[in-house]
Length: 318
Ligand code: C5P
Image (cartoon, rainbow, N blue to C red; front, side, top):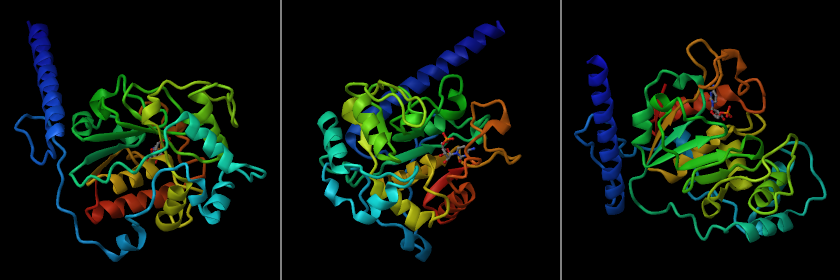
């Protein structure tokens, strides 16, 4: 009897969720969704932009280019010099040739297609153990875009992390296969990363960087976006201000959202209540490598995220 009731309740909830998703899909076609539905499922909505602070204005460059284009000459020598040393010094690289080859396999971005003046709500989902037990899944899924990264897991964690993904940020060593329609967003830290994505969508000739990497990747080739090294340097210069060697994937995804979405909600960033920096799928709280790599400055990134929240630029779910 109790089991029957429970099954009925679960089925009703599934039905409501399915109806809500259909409704959202419909409304997406008609324009901004700016109101909360009366269902008991949370909706992300755009709020009025706060006044700009000097702190924010000193950092935010609205016109910064986010994506790598086939015009390699557009990368300044400053950017190239900085980028080529991120994962050890590199010499004798023909960057122009590498980029040209890349765009024979993938489409070069025609223009940055998020300029449409509409209310786009985005959830940036970091991999922090803080998400465990959060019950944020439905709220995350209620955003237009859901940005995830690296080895983020969904199966078994739906209640806390949601089920939808529109953009998945990765680099070769953290690559995972994606469902059709999801944007693979490559965060390139070295020329080999550009060569890897070229190879993973064509010949599969590249199988090693500093570790073994995926020979081929299952992902929608027409949806691949490659972040520009200039965008990474912008974050390093203006936001983290040279703390850490370069920004973390999560912080980069957050800045991407800040430049492409009208409302940004941030989940899964920072240590848990006991100071552990593990991932939400890891049982061993000491396993989290994020803080220990010393490549990124987790404390500085975290304090910037808090400041953005304090200034009303993002909603930070802790
Ligand atoms: O560990 P990984 O890089 O895959 O995590 C994705 C992102 O989530 C990180 O780049 C970081 O910005 C964020 N993160 C965090 N706190 C953790 C783990 C990850 O803020 N405990």
